[in-house]
Image (tube, rainbow, N blue to C red):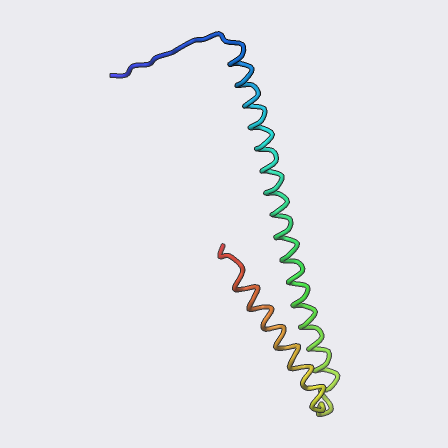
Length: 102
């Protein structure tokens, strides 16, 4: 058995208060949606920066390796190549570790 109770009250103050509440809620919802869009953009921008940094490190390492392919690099140059490769691996690992699973 179902019982419905309806109470009708024509109170202009209540209607005005509810109208203000609805307006405030819609404003809040709009602000939250804007923040979500801002956060999404920031996350996408961060991914682009990380990808660019990885590509830069890969390119530098490849260029140094190619330039020195015909010669045995001295210890200092080889240390730079090793450092670039290490930084590239560390950056890639950090990106992977801090990227949520899809």
